Length: 381
Image (cartoon, rainbow, N blue to C red; front, side, top):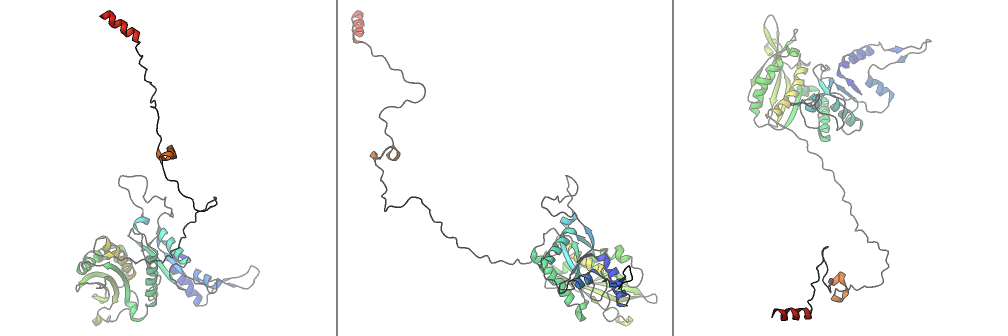
């Protein structure tokens, strides 16, 4: 099923009413028996098809021209001196996240954007069963900067990752919020410093974070250790700022970035890790995926590449072509040896007379008569 992320709140509300006993009934015009109407599309598919695998792929704000042919122009507008590429060309990187967090809160759809082309590719791969899926899988696709076209191995790795996150989302593993891997990180301290001094302060000044007026909210980011950054949540208790929780972002030795939820101030009663997501936590997680793409563009990390599987191609033995002849063989035929008497085709033609060349012919010189020569000589004498 393909659904927008904005409909999750309505589905949760309808599911809650159904659990309380307020089932939707369509009564017949003549007072017939009622018909149960499923609260969500996924439940409707499950009830209509027994034994089928039902997965839900959600999207944020859609962008991009729904044109996937090779003749489609990647530029906006007509010919320009400085052409501008369309967003679906510059935002080809994707990330899959569970629609519901580990503790049942919904990710906000207004902070996510999804490319129509990437969404179509993901839906086609799911229908063709080219990627691993499971019954009840509910994920949301987000697009991020990146111009590399995803291969089948990249899609498969992303689907495996999101299912691992869902399967390990209980207990202590639920504190882990985000993880992404790179091929290499040249300088871990430099990447951690960029997260603490450049990326985090810019995100905390955005309207989505600064607009939180009630309860705890992320206030500042601080560098901890050589490769860690803490984003601190605080709230006012008796006109004093109290730390209620943290998000710890680590640049690990295995070339990855991991984010996990941490405890707050123990003296104020917030010494345990919160079982509920902190306010604005989902926004930071979404922007942290964007930070991973920015780190690759700035040269702080190298994008990880998935090794392509080599397909074994069976070599076909081609038999030598048989020469077909319509002439019946009559034993061994001796080949004639070239000689001077074999004709002009083998030994070359021998001309017996001079051959005229061109249009002009040589004029024959007249032979002088003997009598005339004698007479002239005698007269001269």
